Length: 369
Image (cartoon, rainbow, N blue to C red; front, side):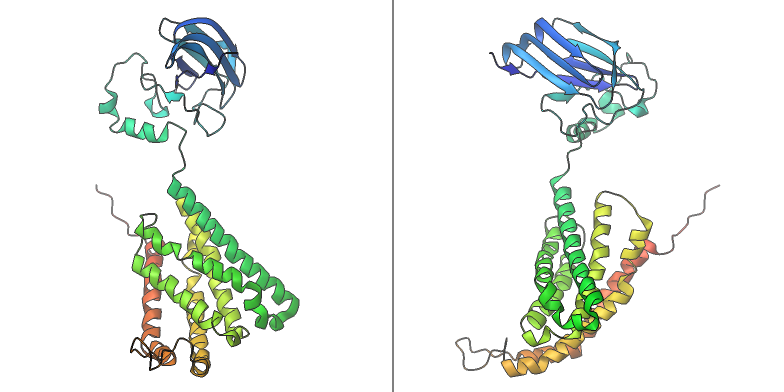
């Protein structure tokens, strides 16, 4: 049985009809079956790969009227005029977003919803009327908008983080409602691995501005993500005696609650879906959560100082091959005395400006007479 190839098919539409141009010359033995939702075509002819048997099947986006449709065989092509059952503009030709590689846009016949009732035979300069139209059509293919790799990646990333922090909050909530305050000492054992995974994943957010995936400051992202990683891995995970402290329970709760509002907001913005409540929540919930989170971080650092004095962990003492000494508890004290409060002020100021930009009073311009 000979192989059947697919010819190039060029399509266009008006409000009432769909036109197809099958790029085949010297067509012989055509076999055409048009039904309410699909078109089947087979014939022999001269196509892109020479004389051969060609065929295709199209499943339409919406029902068509076979009785009101027609086709004609010309020397260089086969033309279809297919009547839509219900008038209206289709977002794409096929019922699925995946466009066959052999299906193309017929630029000569294409009309959009904004073209109104202009005469089909009217001659016009498409490049002059619609600057950049070919570049746009090449990218979008009129209804076959391919999801940009960047957008797909960011959607999966934000969804993964939302699921991760929702899991953490869910486990903490179940344990607390079951055991009350007695559940606090076992919080890190229950959700610590999930929290560490989500936190490591957040280092990708430092790379996103670097590669142009998101807007924002690389330094700002590095400070915020790096600061949390320091608290989680160096202050909590590195000292087992901190795992049982209530401050770890509260810090995990404040962090997770802030994140389960942040990532859905990013997903909505990615797809340009504005939700007033979600935007308000994203730029308001930080007001109580960030100061409470900073307070817990300060308590954890303060409680760790005597532990690190005892264990000497992260401390480098003389003599050593590098001729360098570093006393970790002293560095923690300097951080709390000198850098802790400026860091809080810088982050809170950044969030306040972002909130005013999104939710602040709008400036109205008077209408000109």
